[in-house]
Amino acid sequence: MPKVIVQLYPVIPATNEEERTALRPLGRNVERYQQTLTDWNELVVAMDQMGIWGCATIEHHFHSEGYEVGPQPGILNGYWAAITENIRIGQLGYTMSTQDPFRVAEETAVLDHLTRGRCFVGFSRGYQNRWTDVLGQHLGTPTAHSDGSESDQRNREIFEDNVDIVLKSWTQESIDHHSPQWQVPYPYESGIHGWEMGDYTRQMGAPGEMGPDGELRRVSVVPAPYSDPHPQVFVASNASRATVEYAGRMGFVPTYFSNIATASGYGPAYVEAAAAAGKQYALGQNQAIVRWPRTAATNSEAHAMAAEYDGDIFKHFYSGFFPKGIDVPTISPDATRESLTEIMDQTGLWAIGSVPEVRDDMVAQWKQLPAEYCVLIYHFAQQPKESVIEQLQVFMDEIEPALEEVINYEAG
Image 1 (tube, rainbow, N blue to C red):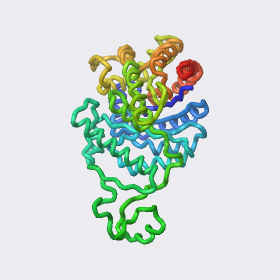
Image 2: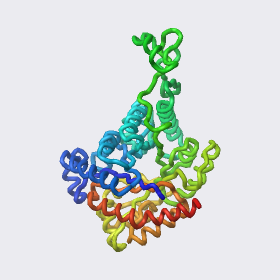
Image 3: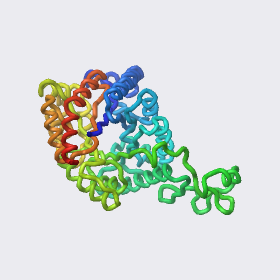
C-alpha cells in the first residue's frame, strides 16, 4: 500500500490580503500562532488515529508575511512523539546547506529515541535566499538554483558534505572529517591538545578518540540512533537529476516536488543510480511523489476550496519559486484567488476536483510512476483543522485504496 505522509505547511491564517497586510507582520502574531499550534497538535493526533503512515513539517525561516512559519521542526516532532502512538514523525526537511550537521545528528538521534524508531529525517538544499543566505553565511552557502551553475554546485558540495557528517555521526562510534567546510578535530593536523579528561577518555571513551601523544584525534557523537543503522532519510527534489541520482546512490527516498512528466523521468534514473551502488529497487520503490489534493462533491466546489485555502500563498509565494519544467504565466497583482486555480491545475502539482476526478487523476499518475510514498500538502491553518481532517479521511477512504491497487499491480 502507498505510505501516506501528510506535510503541513504552517500558514498563519488571514481572511484576505487586506487583513494579512493590516496585521503585518502576521508571522509574529502571538495569538494566531498559539492557536495554530493547538490545532496542529490535534491534527497530528487525528492523523495517528486514521492510520496515516507519517506526518511532517518544514524548516523555513523569517516568514514575516505568515506563510510557511516552520522554523524549528525538531521541537514540534518531539512533542508529536509524546502525543501519538503509531504515526511516524519527521520533517521534509532540515536544510543541510545551512545547518550544523552535528546538531542535526544529535537532535534526530534523540527524536529517534523519543519515538522508539517512529522517526524519519528529511534533508533539503535550500532555495529561499532570504534565509539561506543569512543562516548559511558562515559556511559560505549560496542558494540552490538547480541550474548547474558554479553557485549551485557550491551549494551541493556543502549539502553533501554536511549530510556525510550526519551519516558518520549516526553510524560510527567516533569520527574524524576533513573537508573545505569542516575539520574534525580542529585543528585537524595536530588534533586537540590539553583535553583535561584525556586519560579517562582513552580509558572509557570511544576507541581511537585519543592519539598516541595525548591529543584528541576523533569525536564521538552521542547518542547513537535508536534505529539500526539510522532513521529513514528523505531528500527533497524538484528540478535536479543530480539530486535524484545522489539519493539513489545513498539509498535515500527522493521526494518529487514536480509534475508527473518530470517525476516519471526521474524514476528510472533513481533505479539505475541505486543499482550502480549495489541497491536494488523496483520502479517507484523507495520514491515519493508530492501532491496538493483538493476534493469536494463537485469540481466547482473543489476549486472554490483551493481558491480560499491556497490562493494567497500561490499568488504571493509559490509563483516565484516554481522549478524548471513548470511553465507558470506571470500573475497579475490584481489576480483574484478564484482566477488562480486554473494556473494551479497547470502546474501538475495540485489535484483539484470531485473525488472520482482526483482519484482517476492520481491513479493515472501512479501508473506512470508507482511511488511507494505519497506526500500530501495542506496549507494549515489557512485551511482549518476540521477541513484538513475531512480531506484526509476522504483521501484514505476513497483514493488511497485505488493507488494501492496500482502499486500492487506494478509490483506483481
